[in-house]
Image 1 (cartoon, rainbow, N blue to C red):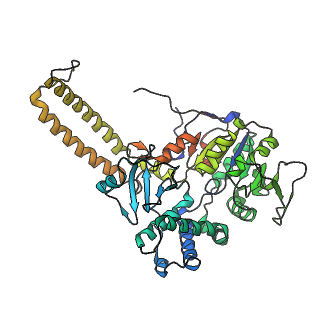
Image 2: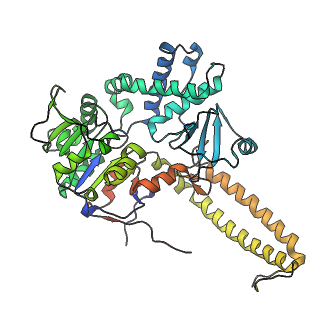
Length: 461
């Protein structure tokens, strides 16, 4: 009997990936190896950004009363900096939902503003939210749009909120608070260490490549790993090489110099004689990593959470194989399991509707004297009103089932990977750039380290 892996723990495949041919696996850290308590962390970022806006940019004191709403923003939304709106678009760039301040545009409002309009990212008017770190930014931006009366354009507002979020990442505001109370912000996951040890037991080399600096990386990895290391002394023993402050995406496309990190002090020194396995480094570039491990690009898998800095750039610039970690996908997959009966009902109802519509088509063709083919379900013209009434009833049943289905997902934006019946922009980007994707690194435990991942077989039916 085949092993049934729970939906939320599966690895999904866009492009064939033979793990047996992978010699080196590189991992990002934040939101990849390290899973955060998203609501707590993003609330911290939200509060820090407000403090910055108050103290440095002299925003009105009333913004101190704002509260973070974790359901308001999801990964993959697009900011319309001209209109001050957050948008959910499908894979073709058409707008399927829009939030202005605290109000979602009604269907007729959405049509008036965005009908026949396509979002293009070569237009500086638009910017996408590719990671979980964008949630606080999007929430605060929409709160400020709702406040109004700030005598700023929506683009100026967005730039200043972005400045605030970036600054609290740069100046240590966020990381110092995480380190002071890691249990509040960081998830411990013993299965993560089991996963890494499993790969090592199969002879895979492992690398950590993070944009975080050494001090933070060391403390947070120690918190997550130390209790589960077994015979290993330090968390860094899990990896053949550790690279901090990597400056991705430049790490994949540039020629930045490596510096060796003295782990006890965090001080840097020049690298002499090339990189060495077991070393801890700062900066650098992907070419030197390939040289160190003597592997070709197709023998490297890079695992990260940022669809552009981690996945797109490692694939485009290096031709490495790619895996995207989307932790919030787990919640969507659990919701999909719970809502499966509604989806099945919608499918059956739509089959009935399509059959009835085919009969309507036949009758209309007959009325014009140009019936193209004989149809086994052919009706008489007098049945046309009856058919239309049946279709109307099915439409109402479908509407009810869709509403029940959507209740299981984000109350405002619905499914992460879908926009109605079509892929969301995020879903399209994942399919295009990630060879495989999953909700957490430890899902690898459900597969052998020599597993052959294949996409679903094509079908015409």
